[in-house]
Length: 145
View (cartoon, rainbow, N blue to C red):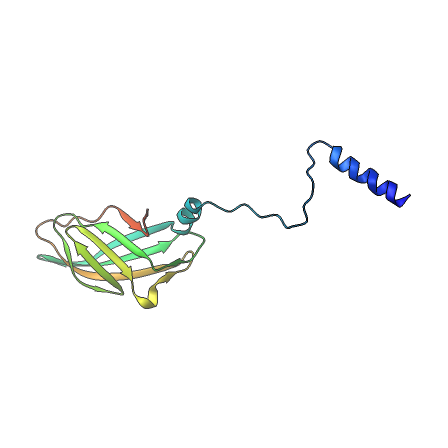
């Protein structure tokens, strides 16, 4: 009798529409796409502030805010200077400049930005006439607002 009930239950399961046979192994959860994960992990905003200026020079502070849900490690901020500006000294970060293009990298002690966290760096700069500000920033390859 128990065998007949088991066989009947098996047949009902197999013959019922939209049913699928169960496998013995665990099922895998869908893997999020890298694009979604990267965009979510690198959502950011940048505040660029001129703290002081003098003929042919200025001091600025840049604050990066992680708007994503994941910690950002080894951040890299890229922007273009207008008007022939250049950085002469930077603190709380590393920096490279080729022409107008500036790449600022994390210092060892501030290399990680937690979700909703911020990091700041500052610099002294030189300008030759113009005093415009960068208008586009990218963090780890993704544009910030």
